Amino acid sequence: MSLLILDKLSNKAKENLLKAVIHLASLLPICLLYLSAFNDELGADPVEAVIHFTGIGAFNLLLLTLLVTPLAKKLKQGYLMKVRRLLGLYAFTYAFCHVLNFIAFDLQFNFSLLFDEIIKRPYITIGLIAILLLTALAVTSINYLKRKMGRSWQKLHNVIYLIILLVGIHFYWSVKSEIIEPTIYIVISFILLYLRRKKLKF
Amino acid sequence: MLIKIPKSYELRENKVTDEKIYQDRRSLLKKMGYLGAGTLLSSSAQAGVFDLFSKDEAKTFSTKSLTFAQDNNSDEQILTPEDKVTSHNNFYEFGTKKNQPLELSQGFKVDPWQITISGEVDKPFTLSYDELFSQFSLAERIYRLRCVEAWSMVIPWLGFSLAQLLKKAQPNSRAKYVAFETLYDPKQMPGQKSRRLGGGIKYPYVEGLRIDEAMNPLTLMSVGLYGKTLPPQNGAPIRLVVPWKYGFKSIKSIVGIKLVDKMPPTTWNRLAPKEYGFYANVNPQVDHPRWSQASERRITSGGLFARNRIETLPFNGYGEQVADLYKNMNLRKHY
Image (cartoon, rainbow over all chains, first blue to last red):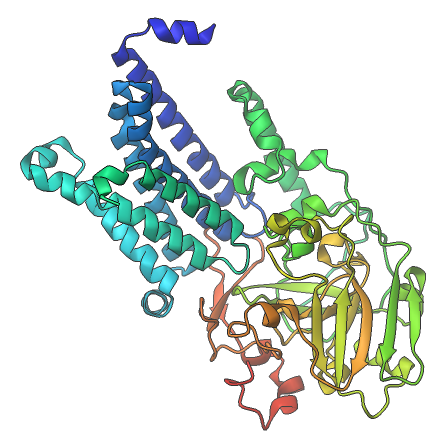
């Protein structure tokens, strides 16, 4: 029934509807998260909870972003491509919150400890590289820069494939022994990269 | 500092506040009800923000009040609230996420229970569930608990010293180490049945101490906390508490204590020997390969903005009582 209604919508309307869903589904959880955390209502250690939630959230959104192109091709629904940037920007937002949570709430602005951790802990070093690259993609995602950069824009934005691998390793190295969840994420990443094997010349 | 231990029937003030905020959240959930949230939120595997919604549906394990001598010696320290002590646990037998032990352990059967003290002793014996609370007089010990993951709590344990228990068995001269073992019961402990829940560690969980560490008066066999018997997520009905070592040494739900002549295997050391040593003394000088041990976050009350990062002390602040045990040892090598 509901699908029938969707069929009658124009592509522009579908795009807007999808964007509204993405905004809601990305913003609502993170607002609830911080509301609970500020009120000390997020389990015994709200710091760990917000770090994990935003980290996993960023990874989920990155994978969704990478799913858009193969999905749009398979379903022949071009309008799907229009939400790719939005998903990517929310992935960046979650990742940015993840880093901010670590610095502000976990390390509590102890910058000497932060630099120590960046140098000594490979999973943090890799995470830092990933967020820096992701920041570059987020900043250059605006239309003005996209036009201005021409062909080098696509080259730069192909870095997303490297980022997804870095993020997978970051997750895998950060756990004590429970490697099943990060392994599943890495496998999904590889599947999404495999779908682009021609572009990547595997 | 006066530490008031309320009777179990006294309603705690923090509980009241929790309830209020909790009720608000329920109404918020109702408002967004049609998002199909119900199905998403009811899964116990959903970690983090959504767990709070489903808490009241689980039945809770019932603990009972204990009679004990209060701890009057403890220094000034703010206790970690009881609801945090019992909802933030590393007990992989009931899941690797901190909130899972509370959620997945409430049906755990502790009575009947048997704990056997055997090995290099003259008089091996077994204690039944009731004897855990009747054989020795119970005392309160307020200890800092420092997790290897760099967070810490302050917990009012109830129990008796391990030395009392061991002396009853009369260890012989070959007893150089003490080996501990957790219950192995995959039917009751989902983490032992499922690799995904149990984090891929080998069960049963085993731990060990050198005999002089075991005989140190600080080393506690705990049967309760906050005036009551232990809830399952904290290691009911009996667990070890070694306050100068990282938390993973303090093995939970113990069924076997064996005195042995050689250093026994220990679970985390077996899994990752470069990360976890046999001794595992709290040491701010020696980092874990993946995180610094120089400081820690003390979990008390307060939300995200609690400025709770504090310096970590050698031997978790119990150096006066235990540093002598290691006086000729290189603690960088024997981490």
